Image (cartoon, rainbow, N blue to C red; front, side, top):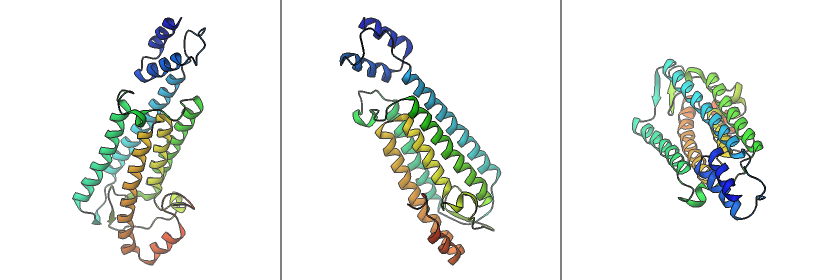
Length: 238
């Protein structure tokens, strides 16, 4: 009977992680011997992860396209080397998380061990949070218009935006991206993803500090008042 169970696992769940997980459950006797196939719980989560990947791909295609089409002259910006270092850091975090997530479960151990249950509820919740975060970031980008730049900068004719998402947080694009990442982390369910999110948060905080130096110099008391009235990333908290 257990041989048949393993055969069904290979037929319906070819992913190495799922096979290893279900084999472990069989050894521990947590599955009745009368069951010949396991539910497709893990496959559901894989579909949610695929959906999240599509969301992120669409987001970045849109983001890059808008950045190329809506270029505007810059009055003052951060040094080129600082921008390169920031992008390299983000790429390092993303690639490291991807490599760790794609590695064998027997490799890095706890960092790639699922700690969030892969249920239908977590799958739906993570996907909805991812989509909501990305939507919030895109909405903020639309309100920012030609004032947006990939690195800390002041544009020619720069405006201080306080409406739309900017009524709730000073940096809603970062809030949306972090929220989207949090939703994706729920789908992945591994500590390595949380570490990646924390590193990206630190990078955003560094970038916020640079941006707000420029904005304070450009808008003076108007931005100082805005800063005292509205939190940076999370309403009422941060």
